[in-house]
Image (cartoon, rainbow, N blue to C red; front, side, top):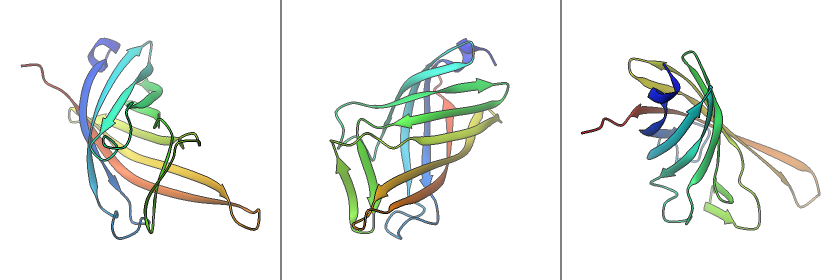
Length: 143
């Protein structure tokens, strides 16, 4: 695949993994990814149906593609986390980095994603939470 084939609009979805609370576990969220690829470097934007009502700006994408492998980091405009009591949005904190990796097979990319959230608890101790899931995307076909 060349840079020109990879650049453009991709349609896909991500699914929350088993370690999430039952209200989110297994939930699938549709997204659109618009990327530009130059010499294997990826930049772009992502809009997903879950975040659309909360952020005015899209998430940003930065990463690489080499042969049939892709990896990129997605960052929302600011901190957003699923918690047992619901979702938490903290505009004063930066977004966590969501790491996506995958392979191109059968005309689509698919793989896994991971998010690590590190916070300080009431006792001043650092605690980390990891979330995982799966994802896929296909290139939008021009009519």
